[in-house]
Each structure stands twice: as structure tokens, then as C-alpha cells.
Amino acid sequence: MRVMHGKPAHGVGAAVGKRVLGTLGAVALTAGLLSACGGDEEPPADSAAMSSAGPEESTPSPEPSADEQDPEASPSEPSSEPSGDGTDEGAGDDAGEGTAKPGEDEGDGAGDDESSEPGDGTSQGEGKPDGKGGDKGPKEEEPEKPDYIEYGEVSNRVGKLQQRLQDLGYFVTSVDKAYGGETQQAIFALQKAGGLYRDGVVGDATQNAADDGVVPKAQTSSGKVLEIDIDRQLVLAVDNGKVVKVINASSGNGETYEAKGATYTAYTPRGSFAVFREVNGMHSSTLELGDMWRPKFFTGGIAVHGSASVPAFPASHGCVRVSNSAMDWIWDTWGAPSGTPVVVY
Image (tube, rainbow, N blue to C red; front, side, top):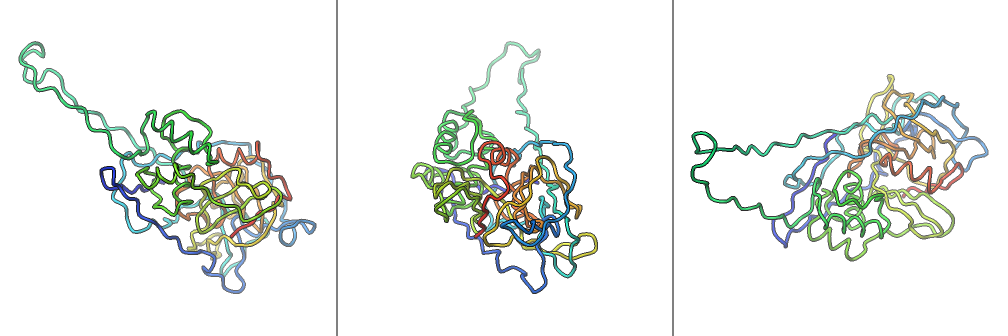
């Protein structure tokens, strides 16, 4: 899936428009709807989550996929507001007219688009009979460096930005001076936290947000908690009220879809839950909606899981997507074992 970029006006005065996301919580919550990111997965009776646990499913062997998305090389003119394109992630949501069978999970089948680099088209020996000698044309001037930073740039200023993001707690594992997929995910998160247009392009407004230290505040005050901000599409790792990590996320897009003869609504429920089931590897949705990397289920078939495609807007069937590397961090560094509170607001 390709990620849209918005191109700020050229020059130092480039402004980044604000994007307002409507709350998805009121979407299609009619009586009888059943959350089904992965289907009708239920927590065990002694869990802090909901109802009884679904049947255990075998865990396929891990197939880590690259978490970097490959957006377009140059930004386009910003549109009013990007909307979910129906791309499937790992989670199906509310069961609509049909009810999913217990244990059915959503999947994350979204992949990344690769864009090719254009050649420079430079010819040699132009105007010379044998390609040697002759008069040389005027020396070409180097193109002026843009006032904004975008995907694909490799420079010291990118390295400085990466370090700043890392210091603020945004998920950046490497300060390598190259603006790639991981840096883009962090920029998306920063723009969401600052209420800015989510295009991944670093103009004046986004740079100012980094310089000013814009970081979302935690909603909980004690214990280790995974907070999911639906309005801003962020996952926060919080420890005793302190935000340890800010991660770009993509939740249910609010659209209806068909799976195994039933109708569902891609909705991520809000409320207080807890991790009640986890799969340490690639997990395929029983609703045949795709794969989820190392999912942690917190209600029904809804899970936080890794995906190779995490856009800046809601795009899943109901689960909460984060990058594969961010999910690895949650598993291997931060923890979030079964019983970890998950607060969705």
C-alpha cells in the first residue's frame, strides 16, 4: 500500500495543515455487533478482559517482515484528509449481521509498495563528434536543497532529527541519517501528537513540534499500561504515568466488510481491557483476512500486532497495527505479558 504525502509550500514559511480525525467510537455500534479483529476470540474466565477464552491456535513459524513502508519519492499536494482505503491489516472488528465463530481472528495482509528510483538521464559527449574534445557547455548548477525534509533524504539534518525524536520517546531505533520507513513512522506519530497534517514531510510546523518537545500525555497514572489513542491513532507504552514510547498506529477504519458469509464492521472498541492471549510469531486470521505479527489480544479477536503496512490513518479491520519492529520492542524489551492493562480511548 502506498502512503500519501502532502507537499508543503516551498520556502521557509511552509505551513502544514491540520488534520482532524473524527472519533470512530460511534461508528456502526448497533445492537448485536460483535468485535472480531480476529473473530470471536474471548479471554479466559479468570482474565481481566472479557468473557471466556477462544480455543488455542497453533502458531506458525515466525516470518518477520520489514516494517518499513516505501512511500512515494516526492510529496504530492495535500488533500483534504486521507481516508482508509480498505487495506486489510490484521484485525477484523465488530461482527455485523453475522456472528463469527469463536476463535476467529482478523489478519494483516497489507504489504508495502516498492518504488523505483529514476535514472538521471544524463548523456555524455553531447555536441562532440567523437565524444571527446569540443566546447563544453555551461556548468550546471546543483539543485537547491529544499526547505523541508522528506522520505529518502540522507543528511546530517536527518540524523539530528532522528536523535531528537529518539530523545523525546518516539520509536526510532537507529540514528543513521537516512530517512526511511522507521523515521517516517516516528514523524507520523509526532505529527499526530501535534495535531498536524499527517504527511511525513518535515516542514516548519513539524520541525517546530520536534524542537518544542511535543509528546502526548498519559491517561493512566500507575502500573505498566498499553494506552491506545484512537482519535490520534497512537499507541503509548506507559509506566507509572510516564510515556516511555510513542508509536504510530492504525486502527479500525469504520467500514463494513464480508468474511466467510458474514458482515462485520471494522471497529476498534474503547474501554479498559487486559492482554489475555498472545502469539509469539506470525498468526493467520481464521477469518482469512491476513496475517498478524506477534499479536497480543486484549478483547475478543482484537489485538495489538505488528504489520508491514501502518499508514497515518485508520485502515484495519479493528485490530491495532504497529510496525513489526515496534511490536518486537513491545515483546522483547518492554514486556506487556498476559494481564497487562490495555486502555483504549
